[in-house]
Image (cartoon, rainbow, N blue to C red; front, side):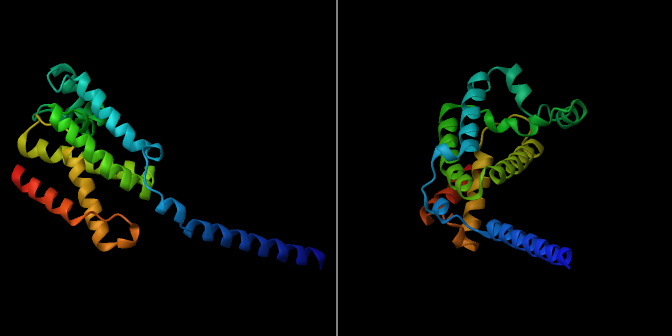
Length: 195
């Protein structure tokens, strides 16, 4: 009889522990959501900015062709085949870090800082990395396929993060990631001016 009572007590204790764990997973840390984002909490954003500066300088703004070709997808004829055959998967992502002039670098650093802080502080570093990798690969393959191998910079990622924030703000306002309407208009106009 004692063992049955002990077994029931243990089972109830395990159920209560599982319930508490579920409550913790569903708990939203209100302090984290109301604190202003800071670079100290956004290490992926810092890493993206540092890699942009370092790899742009290392490639001498794309003028060092040896470094530039090692960081970009490569020639149209054998670029994707070389990446696949030689396992150089990084080349699907690293073109985002090579900027071809100083003004381009500065603008992309600014938007990476603004959008990165907001997304990483709200969604966490892991989700932000996944988002950046996905957008980087898509935004690198699109110009490679349509225009060829000579491109670089984080503009595609900037627009991907902008799109994420714009849609998130419109359809999930409780997430706290709304963009000012003036910024949305600016980004859309700038996109059409570049096309």
